[in-house]
Amino acid sequence: MTHLTPDLPARSGGEYSMLRKTNAGGRIAQNGARRRRLRQLEVSMSETELSGGCQCGAVRYEITQAPRDVHFCHCRMCQRASGNVFAALAPVRKTALRWLAEEPAEFASSTVARRSFCRHCGTPISFAYNESEWTCLTLGSFDDPEQVPPTIEYGVESRLSYIHPREQCAQKETGNGYLANMINQQA
Image 1 (cartoon, rainbow, N blue to C red):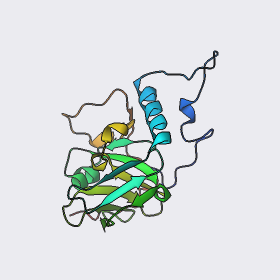
Image 2 (tube, rainbow, N blue to C red):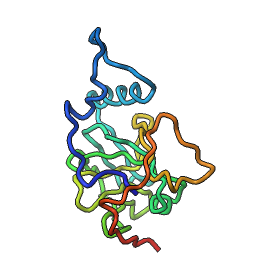
Image 3 (cartoon, one colour):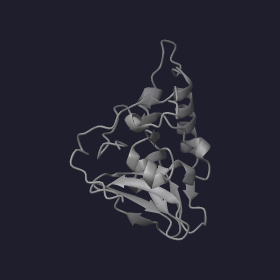
Image 4 (cartoon, one colour):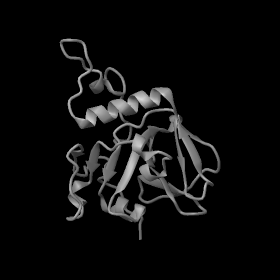
């Protein structure tokens, strides 16, 4: 269930410094599909905000920051919380998230994290560690999820055998550090 560290440190050179590295000719390095898609996201976020919400419209949000380390999580807790084979999540700073309508309800799925959802229609909206400055919005709740491409797969040790890794995503096992003393509160 390692989505983010409790507080993601700022990357040197800015949020997407790895995308701004230049070659000898001074052009932006475009090595592979992952970097191209992240560059497209960075450009689109400089021009507009992303928005989303639940299926009934009671919960609506917008973000003013490009999501960072967008990922799929295959851990068993995320499978159960999303009612699916993995959760698709887009981390943003809590200060970059603005609720436009009703705020979602929350469930403490463990002793270290909470998950939010629409109290009317049940749409999963977010996941956040209790002590973090970050929250992870569900990709499916974005109005245009195409603008938020995943780059990492977490919890790969719990990935179901019929789900195949995405080549463009880094593969990471669930870590023990912050989660070592967590108590799962799901039934």
